[in-house]
Image (cartoon, rainbow, N blue to C red; front, side, top):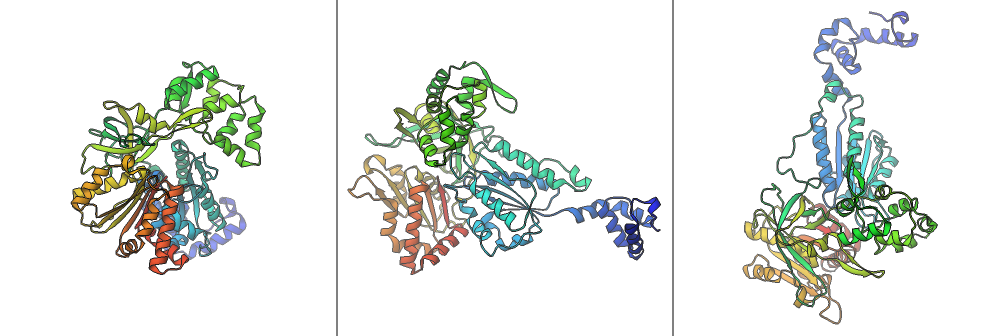
Amino acid sequence: MSFEVSNSPFGPEQADLLNKLVPTLSKEQRIWLSGYLAGPSVAQGAEQDVAAEPAQAVATAEKRSITILYGSHTGNCQALSEELAEKLKAKDHDVTLSAMDDFKPKALKKVEDLLVLTSTHGEGDPPDNALSFYDFLHSKRAPKLDNVRFSVLSLGDSSYELFCHTGKEIDQRLEELGAERLYSRVDCDLDFEEPAEEWEQGVLQELEQGQPASAQASSAEPATQTASSFSKKNPFQAEIIENINLNGRGSNKETRHIELDLEGSGLVYQPGDSLGIVPENDQVLVDELIETMGWDPGESVPIGKGETRRLSEALLTTFEITNLTKPLLEKAAALSENDELGKLVQSEDASLWKGYIEGRDLLDLVQDYGPWKGSAQDFVSILRKIPARLYSIASSSSANPDEVHLTISAVRYEAYGRDRKGVCSVQCAERSEPGQSLPVYVQKNDNFRLPSDPSAPIIMVGAGTGVAPYRSFLEEREETEAEGDSWLFFGDQHFVTDFLYQTDWQGWLKEGVLSKMDVAFSRDTEEKVYVQHKMQEKGSELYQWIEKGAHIYVCGDEKYMAKDVEQTLLDILQTEGKLTEEAAVDYLAELRREKRYQRDVY
């Protein structure tokens, strides 16, 4: 068979090339080529053979392997990654799923399609389980990625100046290394579900471009998770069994121990996981806001996806009104008739808007920068959804079947002439009586787990409510009769009023479940003493524990406590281990990679 320009869609030069090539092809080569082109057989004699194998040939030629890497602090990116991996596998894609710190960086040059899902932690930092990958990617050792296609989903909090910073940096760096952007990066705020779903759908569509019909048709969704149908979108109404104040009379704090009934929910959790609570705003604040704006509380307003609610209910249950962000100020400026708000957000001096939003809420904003134009619907359209609050679980399900315990510190303070209250913490402290219920779901956290070896020693460091997960750790170790030694460093303000779960720790010390405990009560001495000071005092013994394979856990405030604890660990490694500063940093990084240094900080 020869190609004629008059009876083919090819030009003279193309027809000439084909006439030279086709006669030299073997039967197998013709079959492969015909399948690759996904069209009629190039050789009539091969038609029957092609009919049996074209889909397989196309799949072999067109499909690229997909690597999904996630950096996750609270577990949101991990959950999204796992869901995406299941959907891709259901479409018969070759998928590799991994946390960033479990992925061998040198394998990056072998990746074909790369999907990155990452959160941003603290002031623009990568989450702990993304640090090693992030550092490699930005090092001189990072390879050229000319054969890689990629897309990034970034989760963050727009109340921080460096919003979604880690995702933005990884996205930019992949492009610098020569990778091709498969689908544009999407940056998500705290209410990430809808934009994350849009990104996922966009990525799936791009991946299916050019795929064989058989692969595109395989669009069955992964099997529905059977463990529990309750989630952040559909929380379980858990009855409150107990709600008590752990602090003694005269304390500056109010820390609630809350026990919830999970019977019938199907919710399961492990020590180290968190419980999400979907909170409500304070009705008093909602009423003051509506009154100030002169709105009709019964007016119907949209809350997303075609749903509407009465304004008063929407502000109570759906929209965030206690926290201001720069994006909110920018959107509000378009509705304000006061030019000063626009000047504030456009100022080159970022300290001005940062100073304004600190300690203020939506009621302050509408009072300070009125009059306002537009309807209530216009105004609520610029608000983001109330984010769920995550609390470290303070119980072991093995020791407390069908129950979950939480340790929550009520946030109250005075600012700009008004009393302020934490949305969820004060709801739990003031408006959550036994017999009532709270909407909850379990947030898995694989980045804060007991050692798989029950004989491995553990070192636990926490201040205030940061001690909560260690109660779950020791309950679990008691229940499973784990033999590993355990050492707790705990800090708070006063011994008499703030020694949270004192009888629990004393009981476990007596029974040997807890091997050692050091406490620091900062307000009981003239010079403030914190957990890191106690660690420094015991530096020699701490180093011996680490050398014997101890796992180190840190839970609590990141900005101060966790940073000071990390610096203390580095100091101990240098002093007791005779390491240089650089070697100590590498040592701690290796502990992190080995899952022997884990943090749950906020």
